[in-house]
Length: 220
Image 1 (cartoon, rainbow, N blue to C red):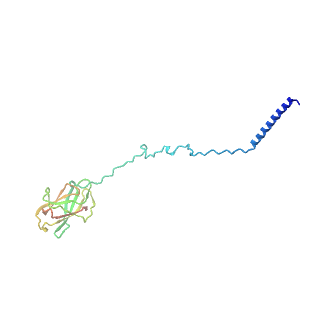
Image 2 (image 1 turned 60 degrees about the horizontal axis):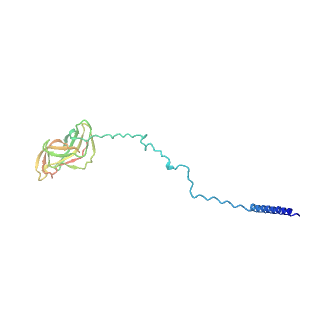
Image 3 (image 1 turned 180 degrees about the vertical axis):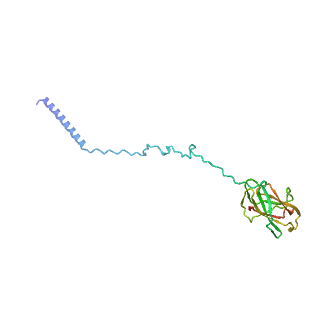
């Protein structure tokens, strides 16, 4: 064999051996199992909601909360009742048919509505003996008798209310400085003006001697 042909054969043999080794290595690599892909790490943060927050939603105001569209409630003032009876619209008289006992005389003090409108008579009158229609009171004013309950007495024009008035004889009291009185000065309940009712009596000038007692007004 020639040396050139021998050399060419060695080269072909080497190339063939190298190719065979490469094929062997490739088959081994393909026969090995592939490593499982590791899962992606879970996110520690919660997903962000794409929907808007409820607090960001505009609240609808009710008609009662808004100035426009709210119905105004009309309030009408309460009707005024009858006014209290005043001395200027009253006339006074006495009914002495009640009799007397133990030195006392029981009378009915009558107050009549002489005005054009109804009026209310309620409570106790202020009563005292006086020297004349324009004179000052003499002695102590009448004490209140609470045995009759206080009530509203509505007086239509021309109608009257009455209260029991007791007069104790001045002669029953030792130490009484007796003086003549022409009648009674009467202050209607809650009034600072007065009227005069003629009825001659004896009075005591001492303020500590109480000759008079008055009850609450009642309807006649």
